[in-house]
Image 1 (cartoon, rainbow, N blue to C red):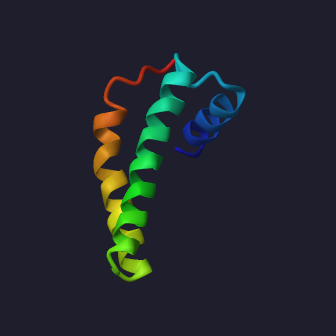
Image 2: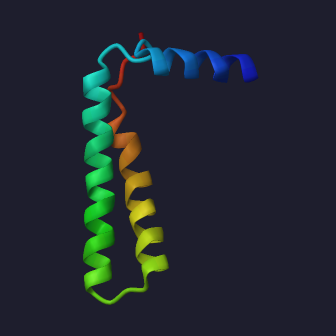
Length: 74
């Protein structure tokens, strides 16, 4: 199990884990932007920071399967 993780990590940092690294980065950036918008909007509404961060993490976590469903590995 550790070997699988270590090998995937090496491939990721070499830029060879995903077939289209730009597409992966774009999808990650969309999820990050959604979480950032959620944090800012909830904080502006007066929600405590810890709760807005937790809600934004939930939003980003729910979006990830949708964003990464067509991701191809090399």
